[in-house]
Image (tube, rainbow, N blue to C red; front, side, top):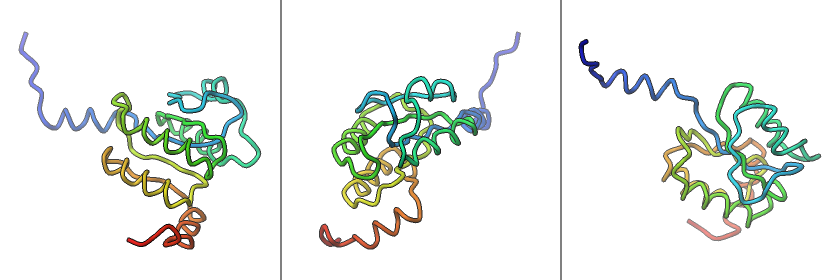
Length: 151
């Protein structure tokens, strides 16, 4: 039986065929804080995190990601966009964790806070992924930019 020869093209093909992983910060009805919740199905999302809270954008995004068959790592925060401590702990967990494969993006719905976004930018650079926000979040960031200091 001939030996299988691995070529660069088969390695690249294997990488592209793997599901992308998105880390998503957000509010949820239940689930532990300061925990990386690895989710792959809608029933698992419901069992782990329950129903969306009234003002949560993250649960809608989570449903869309799972419907498009993305791997999801959900980090529950007390209040979307405002729980500085929860975001900083979560970003540190992402930075230190070696088990998140094919990390494509970190999504921060509702976040316009300069400190959180700057920390997330550093994590994204280290993990070689992108940051996802919304137009409203960008506006919040730009209109508050400089209030914390200058470049």
